[in-house]
Image 1 (tube, rainbow, N blue to C red):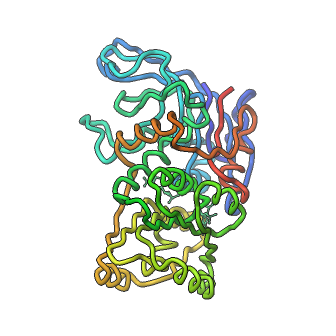
Image 2: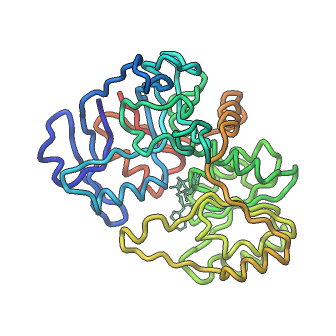
Length: 374
Ligand SMILES: NC(=O)c1ccc[n+]([C@@H]2O[C@H](COP(=O)([O-])OP(=O)(O)OC[C@H]3O[C@@H](n4cnc5c(N)ncnc54)[C@H](OP(=O)(O)O)[C@@H]3O)[C@@H](O)[C@H]2O)c1
């Protein structure tokens, strides 16, 4: 079976064709990535420990920001003759099922169900089914999978589980009302693209911040009323005149959706209206210590944030992934045409280096990048 993997620099010396390793660079760190063939896994449907298990053959997969930590950890810290299979979401086909599996049949198309915090089954953790999901064959407890209907194309199914489940959970927690002013940060991030697309159903006014205006036209076509450029590495952050103009134009925001709280919260929380809600699902500084590039926080102190929150009756809400129902709703909305999913590109075969380059290095990436086993 095939595995897309991050490899130590010596791995190329003991593999043979059709396995291969290729070199790229991410944030100045050399990364060896490759396609490594390993022995097929065996699945015995009759043994008791496989009663509720499902063998899945991956069709396609995609990576996320969170995977960068594992990529850099492997590249920098792992033994030079080892490889590590990465990946956090996939679409696959059910190849075999245990004797007591009730939810799936052979041939079903499935993706990961990241229901969090508890899976509902003792001994089976909640959250992502795997951090190694680009391996071609993998066994999962049935609770960690969800069926996707045939009208969902593979490249969409390979990208919807984390973005769909997380943003539908965030929008559920925000209890949005029609006409609210919602600010989404890091507009070009995959999470925010999902959020913006999902927000359209709620008939709210969508504003967004970004470090790059490259996709202003596309974002406006997706429903963003105004795109605001920020410069997170300058003290000014948002040009003074622009900040004044925005506040004059629209007062303050009812909700902020932020996938990188350490970049935005200290600057944006004062822009929330009284009784406003701020929700975050993540932070930027997930790997800077590994690559020796110190992250510098800019903005209000914790105490100032809490004073603002208290005086303005603001709710700060944390969100990690979501519930099964959130993912079901995202899948259903896509299937019925009310959710758009932005796909940047699809790679296959020898294009492992290209897949990593496009996922993590391409400044002009807009949407999810998929690798497909051909
Ligand atoms: N806890 C959960 O359940 C969960 C689930 C999903 C995602 N997340 C989190 O959500 C976040 C986004 O993940 P993702 O996979 O969607 O990310 P992504 O697509 O890799 O995000 C890339 C975007 O981040 C922004 N960005 C990158 N470097 C930046 C910098 N130095 N300064 C300012 N902005 C920068 C840029 O947006 P602009 O071009 O618009 O500036 C860039 O386009 C991560 O923190 C992730 O861990 C968490």
